[in-house]
Image (cartoon, rainbow over all chains, first blue to last red; front, top):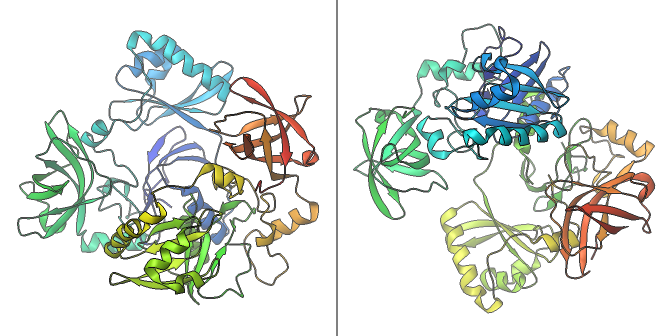
Amino acid sequence: MTCRDLSKSKIGRCYYCPIIDDKAGLINDPIILKLDEQRWWISIADSDVILFAKGLAIGHKFDVKIFEPNVDILAVQGPKSFMLMEKIFGKKITEINFFGFDYFEFAGAKHLIARSGWSKQGGYEIFVENTKSGLALYDKLFELGKEFDVKPGCPNLIERIESALLSYGNDIDNNDNPLECGLDKYVNLDTDVNFLGKEKLKEVRKQGITRKLMGVKIESKEINVAKSIKIIDEKNNEIGELRSGVYSPHFGKVIGIAMMFKPYWNNSQTFKIELNGTSFDGKVCDLPFI
Amino acid sequence: MTCRDLSKSKIGRCYYCPIIDDKAGLINDPIILKLDEQRWWISIADSDVILFAKGLAIGHKFDVKIFEPNVDILAVQGPKSFMLMEKIFGKKITEINFFGFDYFEFAGAKHLIARSGWSKQGGYEIFVENTKSGLALYDKLFELGKEFDVKPGCPNLIERIESALLSYGNDIDNNDNPLECGLDKYVNLDTDVNFLGKEKLKEVRKQGITRKLMGVKIESKEINVAKSIKIIDEKNNEIGELRSGVYSPHFGKVIGIAMMFKPYWNNSQTFKIELNGTSFDGKVCDLPFI
């Protein structure tokens, strides 16, 4: 299912893994947690990977049990998350490496806690299996978090785009392959491990990609990307499509993530884009922004 | 993929088809349109059936092309939809039988129009492949629809629960089989057609189901079902779970759809349910309500 070689993976580690189909189209880009030699959790983005896995397993008659565990994820994110979590779980929690995980006791239950999360600021994700203990932990986080001004929140669009955290369904989907999405380091074509779409990806690598995800900066103060928006050059040729965008206070303009066609990858490339009936100037750049 | 026998299905017809996995758990309950002997559209509820189909096809090495067509569905629903649609497409459109479809020309494009929709009031679904023509049709529907007081809208929770239109992800999911969900007439176990989960369903039919979807009426004026709510008897035993609920003006109380355990299927069965910390009385009934 994944083009990333997990043959040397270790128990207690998280792995960001593109999942692809036979045409190398992205099915999802989850974090996969290795719980045991024969047991994995796939912490998915917005698509039903479980149905893909079930279909594959049934078709191939694999001897595997696939089910949705009763887990709710609680994310504690941001630079102060380390101090807050240490107050509850002690020094040991700050000793977890990035993308490592371990088990911690709270209110009579064990919680798998990973140093991960959909944010570049760092923090933890708590995989709550025992709801009662999880709710008590939630309250405790707010109680002890007062001094850090902890608040409920959700992923911040500005931060996610500035740090180029891809959003499945927005920036990438089943029509894109991982090489087009800049996920090259998670594509292991030179191993003996067989995976779906491997031949297709070898072909893509040999011929080279014809489009790729890049950053764009647009001379506008606001944007609303409900669906992808055409990016054109001065001669009105379509040279790419904007897939996400947001006003960035850091840059004082709109930034976004766009799929750009091959001849237009140069960092000096300028373009035009129509937002709400008005044409704006833009410029291509590398990802991440910050 | 489906437990419904489609071997005698006809081109130009829609079929409501439970899709199940090898354990007979529901993957989805789409409408399947037979476009041609070798070509089908699966108009799905909220789950990625396409991933299940792709996984199955890859695993089984089926010679099949599975892709998401570029289709947006426009629904024209309600008793006046027939008059409105006739004004645009002529008498021929009112001659389509329930769950039949045909092609109709508008603004230079052909549209597949089916007499279907997620409403018991009747109406049409227009499968828009040509966006430009579809947008023009949308405008035309409002222009000619003025005399019928046509308005944009979405499925109405009261109407859907009163008429027991099941909602995938709310009333039913992968942990339920079609016999538990009252979909018996779409389960064809006595045919030669082989399908996933057939043996499992035969076993279920032989042993009998131990829970089933039923209607409930609750002596309350309001409800909010964010997740399923326990239904208990006077002795505090759990006898079922409420999965959807809404205040029904017709009954002057809350009605809902619940998965009830076997000994409690009698229409005279009363129960207790806690809503926002207050206990209310309820009674089991058959579906649909109206």
